[in-house]
Picture 1: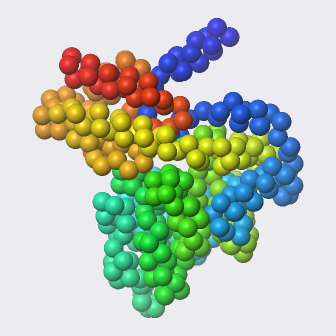
Picture 2: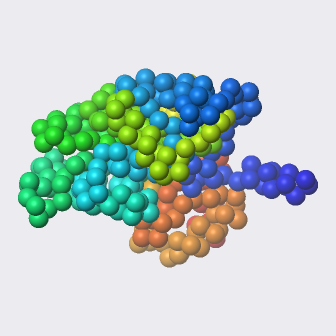
Picture 3: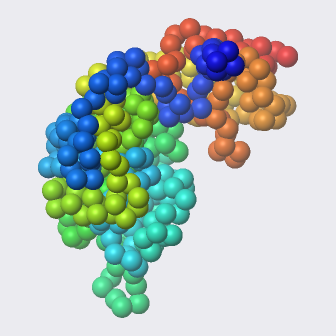
Length: 355
């Protein structure tokens, strides 16, 4: 018990900026989980899961929703529900399902990715999307789906505008394709653009969003779409082993996330700006544009330090940041990062560069 308490206190004294996935559930979430009304969700009988799914569908302006264990499963379930084996999906070369989801679309779905270059603003060029759509020829795979990411993780957390998404939707509809949005941080996009989330996803046939990132729930994502689509996705979830039983204990935290945590995301963006502005003052760093709660930066030519040495030195000061080799560093603000944590982080960088 003494060792456990020591570990908890040590973690609480650490400023963890590696991702917003490191967030703990709030006390209100823990209390809601403890008293959650539950049932067997595989039978569709968990009232708390059903309430979360209804709330999520309403937030996204879709007919139905499905609670899934993770964003990766949500994206994969969407792709498998839209596509057959041998079909092709058009998506960015920096898209999360392409880079960071274990090649699941190919390994488990037999789906071929057709990647286009992501622009610095996270978009794909419309003419390039249209040019990538296959002709009806027996030699070619069938183009079935176009997928976007909003906000775009690898493009510095940039939000994609409603006008751009509408343009992609019109193009997709013209060619009778399906349209999926990986909206892991869609509420960050909505906050940054001062636009309702449902407007950002209106043209899409499906949308996933995470509860376990900036919204602070411990587990889960939600996949939204039409009733017919969600019925197909439910079968896929079962095939992937994602059928959960008394999942209302988890869904209870998701309800709090949607009802209480969305509007406060502006605080994370403000703190990210303060951190980005502070880091930009160091000549040893090159800081990329900051849009939401993600800050990416690299060592400048003036720095003589090695990236792993910087990460280790910051860790000794109680600061944890992400480092992706050639991708550079990443810091992500979230509920458990307050103003004092930002100032302590900047002080730690000053000490590291001074030493």
